[in-house]
Image (tube, rainbow, N blue to C red; front, top):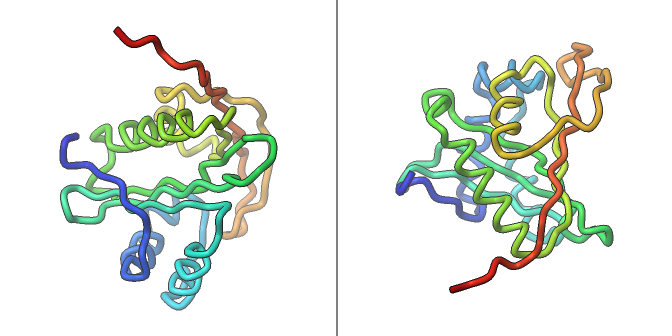
Length: 169
């Protein structure tokens, strides 16, 4: 995992975000519909001035392979949300999602957030397993109609952060 890095999304990443979020496997797993490049260009510009959200490109060296987004950063209750985790299919099942999510958890812990919440579909088994490995627990199950018109069972998953500092030697 030495080559796996996170960096803040920039305007140059719009094409990559458009590409990854229109990949059939990812659309199917997320029950989403295709989007237009202009939507991504507008979104990236908006994120630049949004103190409540941070978006990161996951890269293997210099090669972008995924996207992770966090929001709720300015909430008074110190609860943040993982809005999205998407990794190109050819890089899935290699532990990259687990590694990146663990890095984000540690970053948020150091920033004194108290809890991380995310939502995923019950049928997205790989995501549920990954989130469980990272310490998330299912807090709630509910039905929701998704962008593609399907009604699915969703999981609200939570991880309470222990912000106690660890003793140093």
